[in-house]
Length: 229
Image 1 (cartoon, one colour):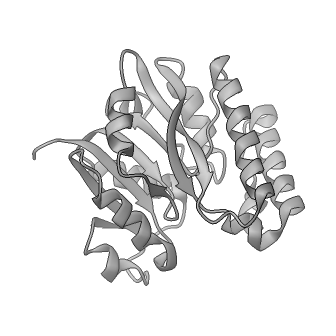
Image 2 (image 1 turned 90 degrees about the vertical axis):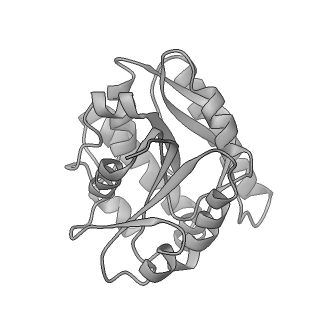
């Protein structure tokens, strides 16, 4: 089976409302790529996803499981893991391909909200990106969850995501990869949604993120209550 430059793996559970715009933004890329959507067989997005992507079915819930299943079917030298509400600028893949040089094994991106409602929404992402950039500059691997990329070699080296982690699976794999390769913050812009913040409110959103991060870095575990918000 012929390899491709980039494989984009998208877990999707009831994401029909957002997924098509994500898939369209990937189809616009000039770099050779493939798209793999991972979802339940009866998901409402299956018919639409089949128009753009290879669909891989999973019976159990879990974002780590879905990402690993997608990676098993992927042929790319670079694996991009994206949420269904992510959108890419037209030259994003070209820039990502160029950024993977030397010993770089993992990469996260400069996130911006495509659905910001005010200046406060934009400021949240600005501050978050600065924090993530700062931590990774000092070799403290930290991700932003919505979208990140690994080389196939690095992903295979650490045997993918830990499927027992309900949250913080992104920080966990970044930490494991950083033992062997560089994990970096990139200035490549990727757009994502603020829908969770808008739905649950600023205070609850920040509380769950802080709690989730604390539980991982102190106790090395996830936050099961995160998905209830």
